[in-house]
Amino acid sequence: MNFEKQQYITIKDVLSHARILISYNDARILLQNVLKINHAYIITHPEQDLTPIQIHTFQLLVKRRASGEPVSYILGECEFYSIKFKVTPSVLIPRPETELLVDLALEKISLGMSCEILDLGTGSGAIAITIAKHRALSNVTAADNSADAIAIAKTNSEYLSVNNVHFIKSDWFGELTRKKFDLIISNPPYIALNDPHLNQKDLRFEPELALVAGQDGMDCIQTIISSATSYLNAGGWLLLEHGYNQAKITKQLLKESGFINIFSRSDLAGISRVSGGRYDPPL
Ligand SMILES: C[S@@+](CC[C@H](N)C(=O)[O-])C[C@H]1O[C@@H](n2cnc3c(N)ncnc32)[C@H](O)[C@@H]1O
Image 1 (cartoon, rainbow, N blue to C red):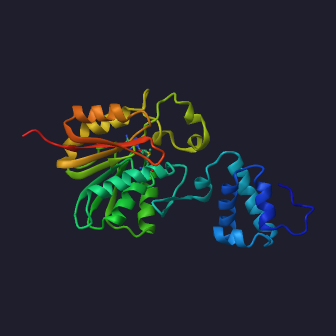
Image 2 (cartoon, helix red, strand yellow):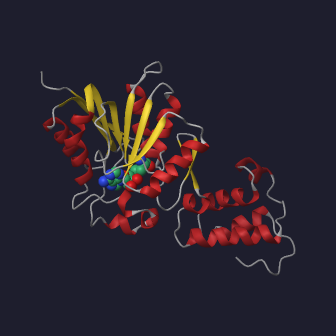
Image 3 (tube, rainbow, N blue to C red):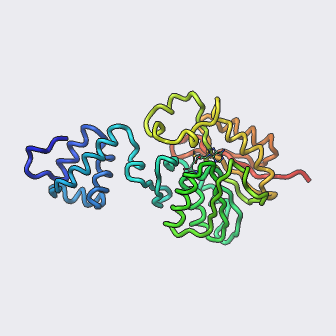
């Protein structure tokens, strides 16, 4: 993008130049952030001029995006379940498909219910905080093995004024007191060590601790399922997000650990994305 010879440079000009390097949508979002305007404003004011400082700032952001850096890390925020969360490269960028996990959790907890909920591998806190916001009577414990992730999740809960979540640095259940929960939920790492996707797109910039789970991607799911029964009340639910090809093995593991009412649900792309079951302790 070189605008040195042009006297006036408009919204339309900078977007069409950026389009050579990055997608229109990404360019639009970055420009909205620089100009502090919304999408409608871009559409209705294409001829508005930019100041040299605005052009320079936008050019720097476009350069970062062109080098592959995810838009959410560039802007330091990401929308999940229509809520804005702060994110840094220390946490996974919450994905739209994970909203299914929240939908299913909210299905299990009715509005008037007071419930103990555990979110394992909370990252930015997106799942825990969203559930806590929608179910004010619930108590949510959010755990992660990364101190940086816990710090960001805490910042998010403060900035979103959510008071019914508490955070703990813990290796899965390791540091929890042996309290019992009515619902355990997790979007754990589930990518196989040698999966070529790890070297592509956004995944290159995200923390390995948030993505990789051993040779077949099942290490974390297996660990969580095998311990969950010790932390669930009778009749409590375990809900897990997993990879596109992991529903069958996840359901098998749930069955072997004594869960009943086992099910899988597909995301909007039709990919089997969440599996879960209810804990039925032996009499
Ligand atoms: C796929 S990310 C999910 C983040 C967030 N829940 C979301 O859905 O956006 C998995 C999370 O698990 C955490 N994690 C990895 N190993 C862990 C462990 N042994 N104990 C606790 N958390 C762990 C990572 O730090 C990361 O935040």
